[in-house]
Image (cartoon, rainbow, N blue to C red; front, side, top):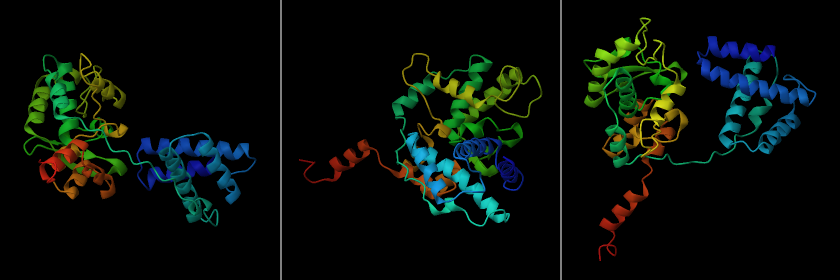
Length: 295
């Protein structure tokens, strides 16, 4: 475990990885270390036979390809670190490729579904003011839930309607919000925030004890945002279940590079998934443009 601990410390101190990312790496590496122990070997004493056996072990568990890719990335990173530190000579995991991931198009909320969601947003008490702001911010800015909970009061430029967000890899970016979100923010800061802020917190979204709201609780708020279950609302980027913001701004004329920056994507490949056209759009264009469809 000492090499794993050294690597995790390196990720924290030198690479500035978030605690959440480091915990994911740690879980993957502990599992891998246990696999090696069950096969009577150790981290420094592996060959391609061990690598292939580990790959078979992962596939036999029938876990998703994305999970396999993540585990391989964690292990590959460990061995690259050990090579860099001259502890081992080569990284056998660099000789294998990650499995090709299935490409699933995001599910998009329709306009009428969004209308239903916002129709149940009220501001009759501090809790409703906070929850309305959460939904407005997620939709207006496209921030991840993990980013939302870490927004601080000092990060908000109310005059310019901008918020500084700390994203993946501790990268900062500015996101823009609209007048609907401004109204929700102003209402919350005037009344609700003072109700929750029992400990002079620096964070924007607080729980009843005055502490930063958890990601899990925000997910519960969103999924319970519709009293009558008219629609299950999941605009949660971290869960990759439903995406709204990127699709909407692209459809209304924004270029791909701008959307990439707004959403904090590292690669344009990630953003490009929003360019896939819905079946309804394809049918509409076909019926309008195809000569035979007009008759």
